[in-house]
Amino acid sequence: MATYKELHGEAVRDVSSDPTTTGEIFYNSSTDTFRSVIQLDAFISATPLPTAKSTYQRAGTMTAGLFCAGNTPGGFSTSTEEWNGSGFSQGGAIGTALYSNTGFGTQTAGASAAGRPTNGTSGDTNATFEYDGSTWTSVNAANTAGRTRQSFGIQTAAAMVGGFAASTSTYLNATEEYDGTNWTTVTAMPATRASANCFGTQTAGIVCGGNAPSVMATALAYDGTNWTTSPSLNTAKARSGAGGTGATNTAGLIMGGTPYSPAAVAERWDGTSFSTSATLSTARYGAGISDGSTNGIIAGGRMSTAPTAVVEEFNSSTNVITAAAWASGGNMVNSLRTRAGSGIQTAALASGGEAPRTNDTEEYDGTSWSEQNNMDTARNQLAAAGTQTATIVFGGENPGTTNSVETESYNGTSWSEVNDLGTGRRDFSGFGTSTAAVAVAGLTPPGVSTYNAAVEKWDGTNWTAAPNALPTATASTTGWGTQTAGLVSGGMVPGTVGITTTFEYDGTNWTSGQAMNVARAFSASGNGSQTAALITGGSTPPTGELTSSEHYDGSTWSSRPSISTARGQSNGLQSTSGATTGLIAGGYTGTADSNATEEFTGETTAVNVKTITTS
Image: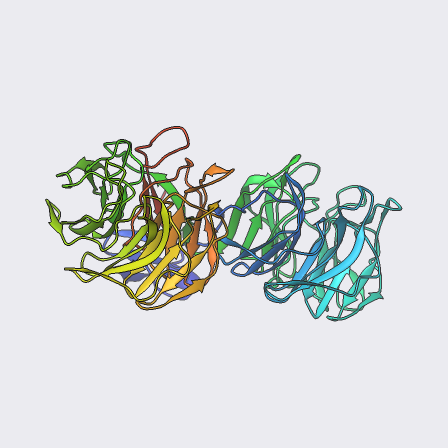
């Protein structure tokens, strides 16, 4: 019997920890096992689209995707979603609502062409739009109008093929090339097909599958001049997720599609043949992009008759990837809203709340909540800054419906009175630490409900008025960060409940940040810092309480996985990482106060190591 070295040219290594080299067999002396790192193909759940959508323009890459127009439950869409590898943010709307349009290019230099507009059920368009990363601009139209046409390439060098002309009920074999200014009709495909799956460049492209009208598996290669037959798909399919700027004629990925009903199987192209790969958890057609044959994202699409918002990522690597998600934690002792939160996910503190207004204090150890010594003053709509063992709470609404100036300090065991705020306030945001905190805006005197923009800073002993107020008098905001790197978003202003405004604070000045994608008010739960903030839930008319989450990276808000139960007026963690961990606890569901806790964990990766056995 040949030895491993004789077969593979090297001996089995003796290691104390697992390496990351694919396919190598090694002996781990720490576990006394023979092991190997295995390549893994898998789809994982990802942050959903803000709105269910199918058959729309898509372009870009796995970390910078572009998705525009399409069919939604509310009809044809003009919306644009930009994908950053973790979540979606809203881009500029396209000028015409479209469905079954095609796309090519990148997130900052993309294009949409052809499709079915809203002007009648039988009409098609040859309109072309270019995207610069923020705005769509109408440019020269293609020569042939049609829907379900497909394209590949970049904004300045693309090819568009086939499609269906509803005006004549004709399947097309037309091929057009775009040079960034004009469309030119070139050599047509050998046969007609619509809803094909395409990837590659203008001079090296692959077109596979589609229907004309029967769904097909055949494939064609394009070299910029001529068409030749290419190896076929393993399964006939159309309207699959394919393409993307990173996909080439030697590395492509086909995700889902419809042989005659929504499909779940993916196929990978290696430049020579297609091979079946991982299976989607949700069969669908009509959406997706890839970076080649090892990474892809399928966003939305259509399941039978209904569009979906479900997003899945395909990865072929030596890592097991676990998607970011919210999971249930231990229930709070009391069901309360408008509490103040501080600490980290495994050592959190919740203080005060209603109804009725309370001085209740609870601590969380990452598994369960427990009652602690009460605050001296009962109140709700207060703010907090610090950790579980070193926190201050300040402001709020007293039982007599007056705005509180009280500040209390918590040392992990007991509360003590410290110096008061200069201005009583409630329904406001606070952030920082127990020795360097900030109180921002809120409802203040005169009366109990005057909108204010005033800012105060805490130095560990006294509150002092900051020279620069928040630019807009606002209440119900959410705050994150430190005294010299803070963030405030959302809330309400006179006449409007639920806004998207974001402001950054450097300890002296306020500057405008990017607006959130979803308007929120009523103490949406916040976790994190100025450059890694997570906001969850909240409420806004007429939607009511929300489940959606967003993440801020210091410049852009993008969506994150939603919590399971809609709620507002909940508490989060102002001093934990909003990129990788978070917490939402308590709050109001729209019908009742809640004691539920949900914990957020960001995406994680681990090397896919398998132990070799004889079985």
